[in-house]
Image (cartoon, rainbow, N blue to C red):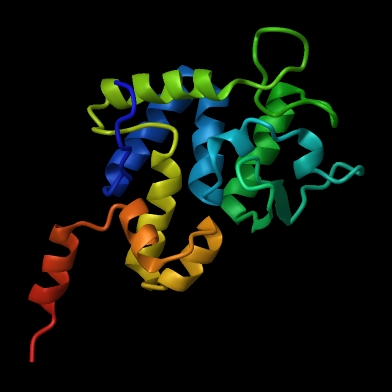
Length: 190
């Protein structure tokens, strides 16, 4: 379905189910989702990652990934949490990737990155299979923001991560709905 609005996944069990499904089908696809969930970066930036973006020349994992955002041409530095560090290290090792290799390679051509279109198809199929409505390549980026907001309520920080210019834009992007607002109103009692 073209031009539909993607939504975050609001249930951790569905996130776990998605990751398990992707890992069972294709380790590469699982890692794409894992990195997007943990970095909140756009898929266009993730598919262009190279091993050299993640490892130092000596083979040691970097503490941060520096992204040059394709859409905005801004630089974003993202700390790599421990579960993601472990997953990246294992993935690079198991795939036997070299320092100059793309992390997520297409089968078309030698050392070519997977396309955004192909990732869209993969995620669309996963969403349909697992009955996750309005799921697409932006969904995991939005999921990060949704859970960050639920845990911290720090909308200014989330705006900064996303490079948004208003709170309203960010709240709409991460899928804060009237139901979420109603819950807050029902829980605040005087």
